Length: 135
Length: 303
Image (cartoon, rainbow over all chains, first blue to last red; front, side):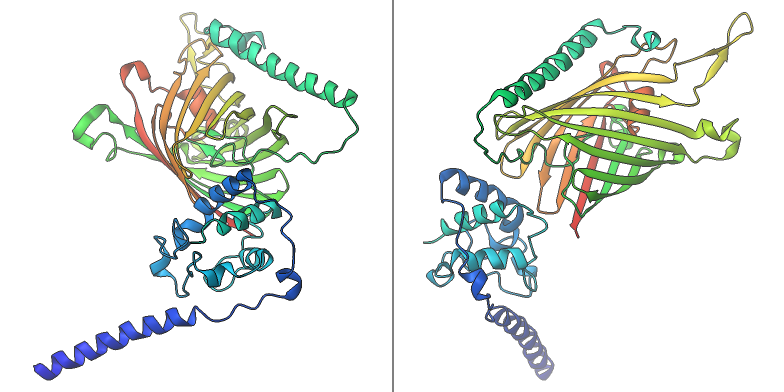
């Protein structure tokens, strides 16, 4: 009986570990083409732009990335790739162009928003709002 | 035409006409300003998200999805609440359902089709955004919505196949008044090829109703958070029929939207879902408490 319990605990542990491994895989590098990386943000970081970006964040991003960009949204637990922590310096060190590119193109669990948010200015507004998440 | 404006509701009629003329005048006035204005070219973008969805409860809104969007609609109306706990306020009563698909083929134009349980109706519809509200230039958004509905019940219900058809045409005029509040007024005309008749005391066949019916809908949305809103509407029949005059509709509810969905739960008087059925045949009288619970779910995919 003891052996049976031990096997079950080990099995449960392995399953838990496999999920952890998947999450770590989500942190794989996301290369951004130089042209996109160096693209200049044409939208000034005005209060109006940040407010527009916040509305878009709330509608399109919050469910996975969380209200404050911590990666703790209500759907985050269902994702196979880690949604990341946008408050960290590591994330914020990216250029505006890189964040714009990743938002537009998407990868794995992260959807492409270039069709859903058809106006590029709106994605720049979103980038401006994401900058306010920095701690 | 005179028959259809045999004014049973003179106040609403006059208010509607004044409102329409005011909107038309304001648009003309602004266009005149454009012609004589400065030569500086400023790119003016349309106001976004006047409403959270292409539907608000029982009515269309001015919203047309962006090009390449496929929309799936699930619309549901339960029975009236009048039986109380006997049928759990209509939730266990017979209900009406519509499933619809729409695709935005080109910018500003959506074509769609749907099926509705009541009278086994199939609808083909089109929606075109004619004008978009812009800051300081165009005061309102204007969209046309129209449909053709085929009643697909057994042939024994119809003398001629043409009697299966009904039509609906509506002009939707809306304004996002503040970032939180949007309002819409929408005059409409419904037409049924076949209307029930009766034999009068002289033995002559008389129509119970006119084939055509004018109505006007007013609705509004007030956002209570980024993604949630209170929605309310009122539909007023304008045409007076010989018998069976339809009742107005009062409806209110809540809406929540996500990146790809809109959810609405509401209480109202309309049961028909298909707009011309609602406008022509609504028998639920709000003064008698004939309210029912309904919900809409829309799902969007972008291609």
